[in-house]
Image (tube, rainbow, N blue to C red):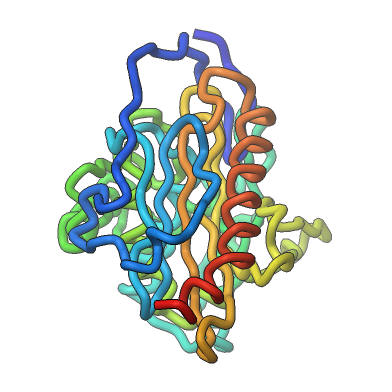
Amino acid sequence: MVLVAGTGGWYGWYAAGGGSRSTVGPGGDGGTGEGVAPLARSLNLPWPREGQASVAVEGIGSLGTRGEQKPVPIASVTKVMTAYVILKDHPMRADAPGVTVVADQRAADESYSSVETTAPVLAGRKYTQRRLLELMMVPSGNNVARLLARWDAGDEKAFVAKMNRTAAGLGMRATTYTGVSGMETSTRSTAADQLTLARAAMKDPAFRRIVATASVTAPGAGVTFRNTNKLLGRDGVVGLKTGSSTPAGGNLVWATRQKVAGADRLVIGVVLHQRAGTSPTEGSAAAHEASRALIAAIRAELPAAANRA
């Protein structure tokens, strides 16, 4: 095993596995329990040729799921569930700072790691819940994810158990969490399951505000981080979370707003396992490009398709 840098961490490199990929047909739902919306059949979407993807429009339904829906490593996309559980346990208004959290020595010691993506925190310093969630989601701070887990559940193992219970409650049958940051390649899911989670998470106004944050400054450190989601702010994109590593490839959960038949609709998509087995940089670029192509096609075709329906 060779350590390879990835978005949200460093990961061991393993030879990419072979095997064929199947494609869910236009009428399939990829295990989401929701049939594809009739208007989706008139769309010509540029689905990724590898990995897996799933898209849905709130108020309209699924636009389809492509690729074999087998569990794959999801890297820092894991943090969507981490944030979702934190906000379920400690709800906050969209514009509120939330409760106060004191950073422990472990989170501070891990702040400047040379082997994973982190965000600087100072031991004993008080941080707002919002700022820590931003430091976890915007630059993908692994140490902050672990800090929040310990604060919420006492230890990371107990928090991971909460993550898996929550996944089961949402019907994410193909998902297993083994850590809170995405460092572990044993944390695995599918595009269909992550779409289910993203749709649930985006119902929370505080979560929506956090994942739409373009940049965040670490208090006391004077360091400002830009969001790892390079699509944010373009073509109506309002979130959501990146994740990449050599075994996971490039992964991107995205959300965009679009006017459809006179109504403002939230379109949510998941692209997983792009260029797995290459470098995290190459995988991330592929996930962004695949997502950009889907978003562009949806924005171009969905309004007309809705008017014809």
